[in-house]
Amino acid sequence: MSHQARLNEKVVVITGGANGIGKASAKLFSGHGAKIAILDIDGLVGEDLVQSIKAANGEAFYFNVNIARADSVKEAFRAVENEFGRIDVLFNNAGIMHHQDGEVVDLDEKTWDLTMSVNAKGVFLSCKYGLPALIRAGAGSIINTASFAALCGMSHANMAYSASKAAIISLTKNIAISYANKNIRSNALLPGPTLTESFQRSLLLEDEAKKQQYLNAIPLARFGDAEELAKAALFLASDDSSYITGTEFLVDGGLSTGRVL
Image (tube, rainbow, N blue to C red):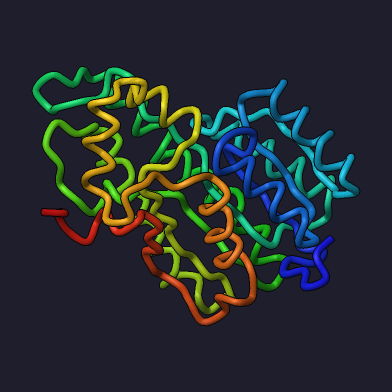
């Protein structure tokens, strides 16, 4: 554990915690003294991560959840409270970028509905069933993973994904206002292009020309990595951000600021 543990004894729920930014955050948060509840649909990877955290003398718990189903989410939060007795931080990180997502005229309804169901409805359900636990704990921090794409129009974009992430920002702000009097903070984390496995699969970054096109648009001229996003999430989860709520926390290498000419 870190000598300056920023989440000592706090119980943190991470949806989509088995891979990518969620996995990096689970490891980092555990190193700062948190007890980690990983909610994910990927059971084998989730259980492996729990064992890895325990091997490093951390405390972790995995629960299989379909984030788009109310009964599954409700059961998951009940299980976390039964396991750890409380919840202090809710990191809603589960999400998808569907391979058939694209421009609006080509976008089929099934892809739109699935993206909205996992990304936007998933955050709604997690807040619906997680918030009461934060209130019972007397205070808490909610971090909802949105995207820089929620703020910027782009040609040839993944339009269902972008729209779902914009919905998350709106929900985040409304929760921030509605639950401030309960000592609940709510902030949106907006990653830019981050080198997770899902990002690389969805954007086919083995295409060197497409990869370079992305890099040319980023002022810092590189992709982010999951550990950098985890550090940003740690700030929002911890008391270091105790006077911050309702914000859009961009971690995108400057991509959303404008075009690199």
